[in-house]
Length: 509
Image (cartoon, rainbow, N blue to C red; front, side):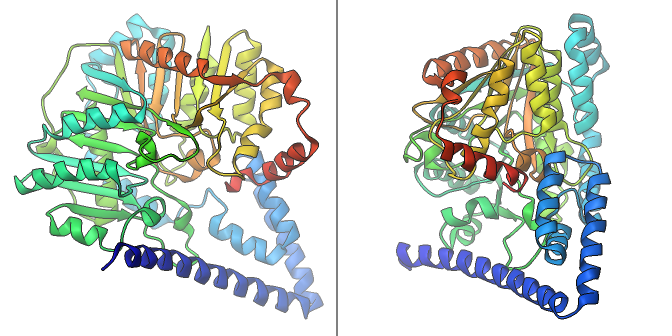
């Protein structure tokens, strides 16, 4: 079958799924509108139900901005709005999925043992920042490690180069999980190694998110991989139906090799991430490589997701490797998911802002933040902390970037310094503070990462890599345009209107 025909079939699947979903929503709207329009009693009942739902939303725990967006929608379309809210209102988790994930975690997390001396050593040398580790470990369920080597990798070209070297060393297994797995040069280079390793008996397992990857693969992509001896699992396949869980995607990026080496960061597998394909100017991304004990946590994360998607339980004990490295500070890998009431991803960002003494440097492709995060950023800046944020200058989504920019003025007025990466799109997600603390991972500063997505990252403390991250941030600032408050106040009125309107619907983005 030709490349063109395969591409057409993928597009057809997307279009059909979207049209069927739209048809169901339209039918639901029509039926509910028709029923209430023909009956005064039912119309009155719908208004009462809408009012009751709004009261429930106001009294539930959660983000005020998220509540306001849904309240506006429900007041405009009472019965239809209630129906859509019950499906995709956020915060609702199907009990069987929650239990399923808890069961998966119970098979792997108990094998992650933290040595008491590690926590004691951190408290002795750095009591101030040890509280961050206490919080993050308690919320995420993953332990603190020391004997782990880390290396910060930026931009994406360096990530691929290092990853290829490590993949070539694999002897037992290679586990990979990505939001986007796109065909192209980057995948071809990785794929060559995977095929060669699979022929030698190396266990290759790959997870990718269907929503992130659906437009980037040909029809027979999965079939061909399985024929090559590579195991593949698709996270949350897209279906043309109104599904509560469809809004929750796996945004994680994890590579684990023989239990000795792990990678994570903002990068996916796609040519734009290594600037082989130009999308939105120069693509600036970052990642981190780990070697040593902390790799075990990423192994457990992958095993949990593999069992969650395939129902296959893995023998994690046989996958561990004794590969301790010399102490270079402390490392705490963590993950976050929408199937529980915890929020370590946003929480550790807040912790860093609240405890910073000198500076906090941040890069994020999106700055779609709630009142709580805005208050933390403003308070840190007003307290004399040097808070700097780099966002893209060339956006990837026309409707998202104005919402990022909407938040500029309030932050600038508090003393936060904001820069836009002039050469293109910055996709890196990191915090670095006081030459002591940093976190690198997949977590954007937006509602999707904080509420809806499965995410992961690495917190590091008293580690030489922290200074490497700081140095790279300063090099990136030199390439970026600072947003001056006096200039920003003069932006065109139409831009202000667009930003204000789109901001209302920020929780849906």
